[in-house]
Amino acid sequence: MIRAVIWDFGGVLTSSPFEAFNRYEAANHLPANFIRGVNTVNPDANAWARFERSEISMSEFDALFAEESAARGYRIPGRDVVALLGGDVRPEMAAALRHCAARYRVACITNNVRAGRGPG
Image (cartoon, rainbow, N blue to C red; front, top):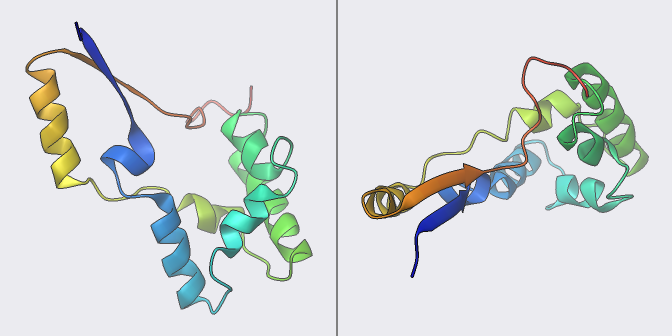
């Protein structure tokens, strides 16, 4: 018997940040999937991983991501990447969430950084 439904947020209830990354890359004449490629190098200790774990501040992420992307050929400030994470609500998923919420307990999980508290 189902008693609860757990949702992820980014890329499920909202559009995928990968779509926004691709639009940014096209607008800035960067290779497709460049941002995702930066995030695959040293995936447990790169700027993205450290930022998601709240080990570094936004300003540190901004500088570190710029360094990591420059090492791959194109400098992208980390703040530009963060600005792409908002996404648009997917109407069909919002409807599915409302449907589930009327019948079950629902919860949302995500791996966002702690806002306004700094690292750690």
